[in-house]
Length: 244
Image (cartoon, rainbow, N blue to C red; front, top):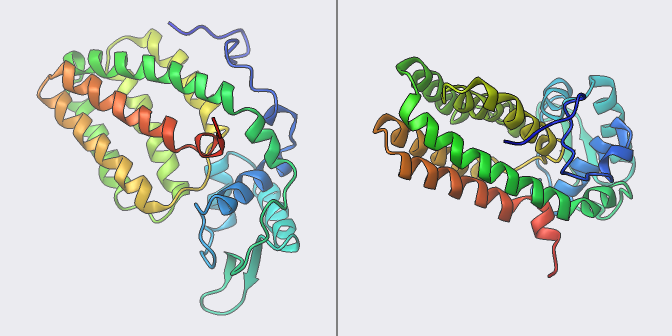
């Protein structure tokens, strides 16, 4: 079991870079990195301020200030009219946000954190295959259907979190939920805007997992969970930044 201290933090994960950033700089860095990596495409329209605030777990004023400053940096641009709003610039400035280096510097610790999630999630899927109730499966299925319909990465993020915490509860082992939730919370600090096609693809793994749970196939449930987290390990921006 993964243990947390009295504050709910994870002592095994030394994530120092991001913890030094203000909320404003963290939002700037996450959006700028998504642009630098091509996760947000030139010309793409960003969700509204309230949606981004919910997806990144910060206040709306912080998001508004971050968007204004990123426009000034040439990363984003404001448009008027029917298709108005905040968009990625057609020729965005790259490397404009110095705070992004804090995310890159945490890369090794983040990958260790993902390994901890891998161990927990495989065990959770295995246990849930034998204990998930019809109500549990119905709740998980509803979330999968919702993830196939949501319009942007911010809504998907909220559904994804509820799905995985619901999976932990479906094990029938209450003591698993807190340590697993702590791992998720740490990882979600590094959540970047992602293309919806990539997120929809990840949702297919959620469907396969539910199918395995319905069949009470513990081996398949564990394997689907393993693949799901391995994709996370290979596709999170820290992995893209690694050169070794």
